[in-house]
Image (cartoon, rainbow, N blue to C red; front, side):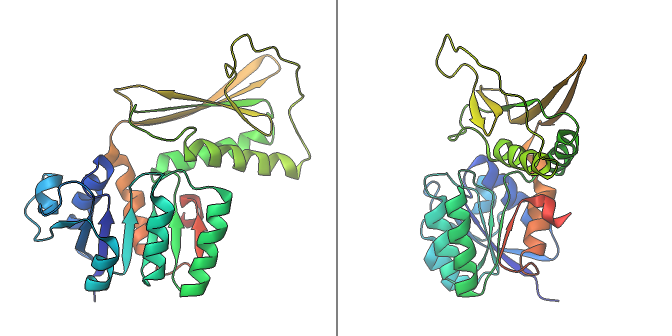
Length: 267
């Protein structure tokens, strides 16, 4: 059985190094390319802290896709570059697994159209951690019964975008569930003594973003009801927590058709 040929884009970053490690250990996968603007010319295995893999880091994604005829490209780069990278992947007939956050609704529409045009597939995952996906599912269920809810998401201080894709996806899922029952939280007139102190607002759901060193990826969804509160929390204490989800996406992306948004659609 042919191995899945994988390129990691962002291979020198913290997340990229973990993906390189994970892919290199799988018997049904082959790391055929590694791309980054840093550590160019260095073996991807050396950068990831594993054995030498014989794959040097390149700074040209398009050339590597063409040279290797990769099946899948995993993008874990930066919000400012994610759409350009995604276009390059899909336009060169590779399937895309996008873990970089910062994807908008307009971006998703564009990715869907690119998939159809080039007959390839893409999975956009706001969070690869299975526990985080379950947290979102449980929050969606709770939102049916407790419409007053806020989200606190906490990440490392190097995360470029706020709020996180996970927080946005969680809010969207809860709003979708509330819409079925035509149930919305009662609006309260508020006075902000400091601008923005109540966080961001997605159709009545407030999102608060924390950025501090020492954190990895964490989210708490807090529901309030008559005489009670409910907290649903997920903590990724290591980037290893994302790897089972990454590997699942690599294996599934050739099977799903077009665009898949969210790991929950694969479980």
